[in-house]
Image 1 (cartoon, rainbow, N blue to C red):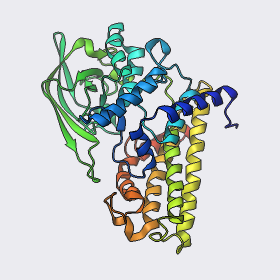
Image 2 (image 1 turned 180 degrees about the vertical axis):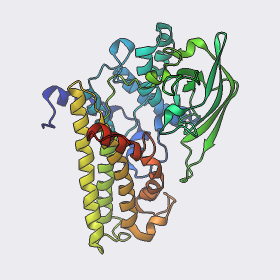
Image 3 (image 1 turned 90 degrees about the vertical axis):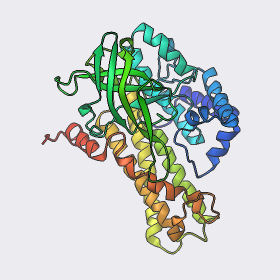
Image 4 (image 1 turned 30 degrees about the vertical axis):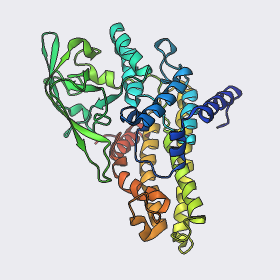
Length: 408
């Protein structure tokens, strides 16, 4: 395997790197240097913050990327996208991750809704919904999971009943990221309760400010607010806001186009964490660190460093598959499972390195190691092996599709 850039790839990487160096707003440049980062989606939250400085940073960064035509890298150019190959997407994502700056735009709108509309949407839907995403005028949230339908998403029960030219929606969604500052939600609903569970599902687009929609915060155990539960009580959705055919919404939701799936961002983030940890225990944090006293800790840090390299090679393997016009299958499950579990191990190792100092939660406390970043990531990493497909689900995929083992 050859992981070196070709001449064209190196030129593109240099172009992306140059744009980042020249155009990243001061706010995001300063955030990139810190260990502590409170927000999971800085651009979207800055856009809706109501604070002039934050909104200006979001606007400037969006315009810089938009001027290059890179807001939706994997969309075809005829729809306003970048038309990137999978390898160009990989390079673009890798450079953003290396610089530790956020990608601008609605990640759900760009990564999920756009591909679904391009493949399954009507011309009117494409004309109505795609341009606002590319102009940064709208943030989308994802209304998929329910209290009794998470890993087994096809068991969802939120109902949509046809009433003339509208659907009437009743039900509940949970873990709805962005809902507290989103404008629209893409919603999976059950339109035929008698059909097999993967079939009687329809894909609706809903203005989150519609009458009957309630958004309630879910405060996580790190006192953060990233997700919500949403309730729908007799919410009316026009029929022309259904994407694809009625009862075929499951297949619409699975549309990804040629979206890069390597999770190179996670691999680079873990490498940055381990390098910063090593730098801190050797430098300003040496007095709080226990690493010089316990060989087992040094060995554990070395293991985390190796795991960061393994994650990067998983990413390179997946992007190599995609660059050959093939679709990653169990390989993506291997990478997701390993990455989420390695992230939890990384957080635990970072905590151990500082002993009782790691109990300090306040990132502004001068005694808190590395702005309490490992303390907070330790708590926040708990759902990492559940979200986006639990480790149990990933192991089933690996066993059946990768190893050919029987189901049962």
